[in-house]
Length: 330
Image 1 (cartoon, rainbow, N blue to C red):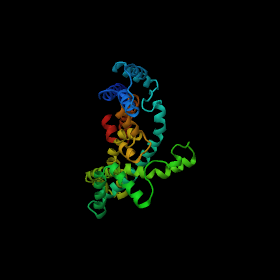
Image 2: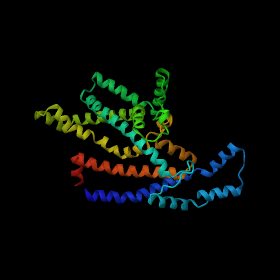
Image 3: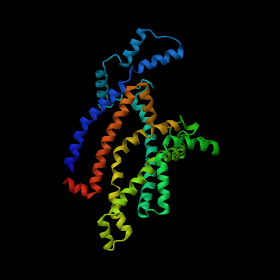
Image 4: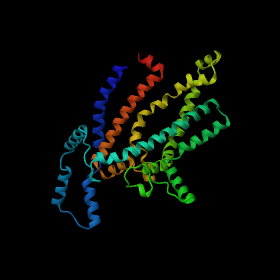
């Protein structure tokens, strides 16, 4: 197991390098750069045109006068040293920009994940055990509705109902008086008051998907001979379910950790934009639109690293939970 982990870690290093290279090239692929959009917006706002000398000075100031490989090497070297660069759009260090939004992103996504798992696993087990019952049909119907409904559309519907029926805004994570206020217990309580709505909206789609996965896998396991043998030996139904088929049916849910870690960092971008959430997703979206390469490149590289780390954790947990994987690897 130790050799397996070491080998995976060593393979992850060149993989991350290639991913960072591809991500940076993708950011640079659109024509122009951040300065082109900045100059265009400045001229539209003021009605004044910048001279070529002024544009050249700005290009040298932002380091955009260098070749693309030189900009990449400078960025990746600073990134390895812990310097994520400076945002062109916000005129702030990228690390400070992300530090403000990462805690809120993790809080929303963690609550959404706990909601999804706490609801999906029991319902999936119940639907499999009571296959074709009335409750199974009800849960299946709601599951298909949850899968078919985009999260951002659900966010719009919730915002409309909250405002038209109850007279309050469901957008944002803070009340108006706490948006720019320093952290305090009152601000934390206000955050907790606004947290359930976006967390449930983000978690609905994942809940419906996990219910279908859990139900289908458990139905497959319940039809296998070892379940019949366990029943013939007099094992109680509850102990039979928890000890054997549920442990195996939950394996695909454990494998989702590979994309859960980057989701913790980024959150749901479309829902965050619709609900005006102060998370990392909207920052990445606007950075890609404006070609703010240090912000976009740093976020994409962090997401890639978290994906690789999450996949490694998933493999280790699967080997620990499922003896077949351990014995097969041995």
